[in-house]
Length: 217
Image (tube, rainbow, N blue to C red; front, side):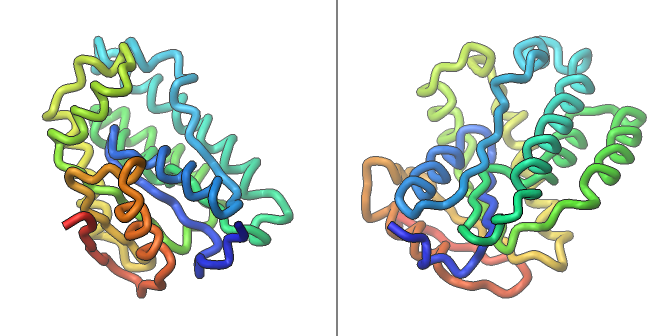
């Protein structure tokens, strides 16, 4: 099916760990023939060590994520035919800074921030930033369901910190339409009506600012 339903040419679908952003992004891209950018997070060799010793491995894990995301986005966004199809990404490059601010100490973050702004300067922003919001209990269930060994001891406090980092960022934005979709208890894989509700929200245009919607109510 052609992807003429979307008024946006570049959509980033974000969310906390276990929110379902990669699953949703992939489903939409397959149905509508969108170009797809998926984060290659499992290739990070420091990630398992970070979950065991976060203070020791926070800087290398975040630096690896940033350089890999930059390389991927530079390749994808630099293609000539960028705006011939709707482009869907399951992450926004700025998430690099949000996670780093949450995980690094003050001096590490100051250095990391300088590197980030140099790399980020050339990237276009998405025309719509979507955030899939689930409560922490839902996230933990999804994380447990997908069974990744290095995520098995994920602390709810860590997920809450990440969520708060996203919301703090959203409040400070003045040049980006942000769509927060509450999907508590929603299974858009099995429930076609929930999936259609999500699609309908993505097919609308939004002015700059925060817009909050709930599906599956």
